[in-house]
Amino acid sequence: MSNKQTVSFESLSKQYLGEINITMGVLEDIAAKAASEIDGVLSSSQKKEAGKFLRIQGSGVNAKMRQIEDRITIDINVRIAYGKTVPIIAAAIQERVKEQILYMTDLVVSQVNVHVQAIDTEPQTQIGSSVEHKENELEIGE
Image (cartoon, rainbow, N blue to C red):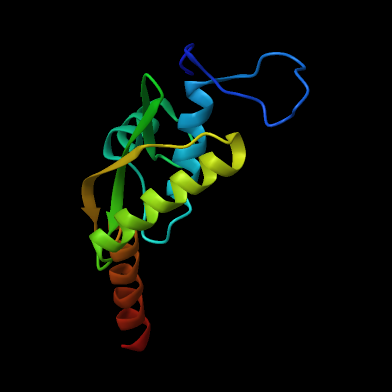
């Protein structure tokens, strides 16, 4: 569901051709996609659980944008893979989000606040399948 509010900005063209507006939802989508491309980012806890229940596919990174006057702030909720350095990943998310929004919309983001919701360890299905595999090897070898 995209936010109906829009962000207006000046055209780079010297010739006035009309007004350009981008919805906040588009900026949130750009931010979520940019954050999900960082190595070690898995997904946000809320969207992952809701996605399972509603059978929704996607990156699972949750981004929310606010605009106060000319300042744009983005809050991003993510899950980080176990063993990754959280401050390095958070800084990479901040840089990547600012860079992509500037590149795609020519808008400057004032702040990117990264909220690490959880640290994910190895999924249970992989652990369970490796145990079953070892049990099968023991049965075959006897």
